[in-house]
Length: 326
Image (cartoon, rainbow, N blue to C red; front, side, top):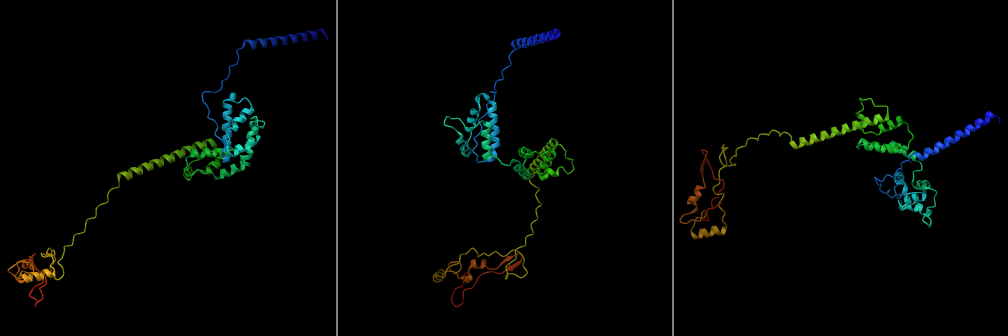
């Protein structure tokens, strides 16, 4: 090695030593990195139990489980602690699925939480999630729901599909309500999915607001009442005419029957009056029915310048010495 090479090598060693010393000094002088405390301001509730009775709940349960574990990592320092927590959130068929992997010492005979979740997905997950999502995408409809509720369900289904924004936009439009579709007849729909979603939400709100206004107006009209219809004049009253057999050509009121209030007497009473020498018509003394003043008042009378004959009244049969009081 030449002299120049030895000097260059010696210089390189010196430089490296100086750099190491500088880094060591900087590490001692620099303040320690601030400790990131756990987020204790908001306590997450424990994940709900998963029983396996409804397979569609598995994805949501797994997502909540992972959020719980990540929120307080100090509670779960290793995979066994994570799996034990997940095991305590199982019930029913799902619990029976994992139970054979639980050892006598309380450990779970699986490698990690990922293996734990894969075991549940193999038993209760959808074996062909994409095909299911495509089928659900064809069936989903807004109907009478608010657009926000329809779009929330749409996003859940779209998460399992690898569709481009244009295909998602067309699928979203296909499931819209008829009223919302009609509102786009004279409007150019945006090509971008986010802009189309915003427009749909705006139009849906306008349609529902207009419906509410119409309902309120109809309610107010019904409470105020519709204008009353003009009353039809009553037909003129036809004057009462005299009964048949009274006065020919007379069209005035029917004659008043003065004897209508008199009670009809029985045959025994008529015979008793005759035996006592009393009037068989009024029951008085010292006169007969033919001379009875009461009977004469009930006979012919004047009404409107015409003589109205008695409607009812019968003479007693001749030969019996008495007159009928009817």
